[in-house]
Amino acid sequence: MPDFVNGVSATRITGVSWRKSARSNPNGNCVEVAALPDGGVAVRNSRDPEGPALVYTRAEMTAFVQGARDGDFDDLVD
Image (cartoon, rainbow, N blue to C red; front, top):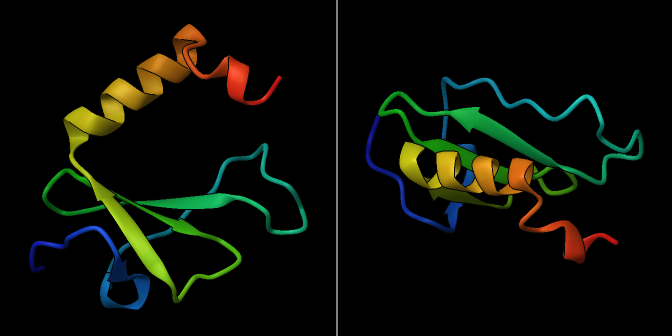
């Protein structure tokens, strides 16, 4: 699989399984993630699955998830 950059069409990321949180809105208002073979993670908007995907390294996703667990972003949804 080639190296992907942010903004690549999600349709170009093949051979992966996209998934969303069990807490996702049933109307499809959520993001989906896919593990990439190089250890990175791709993120796309579930309402636009053929649109652009953001691609993050494993370290970037680890930092984000840890920040979410620590409450670093709680002010964005209160």
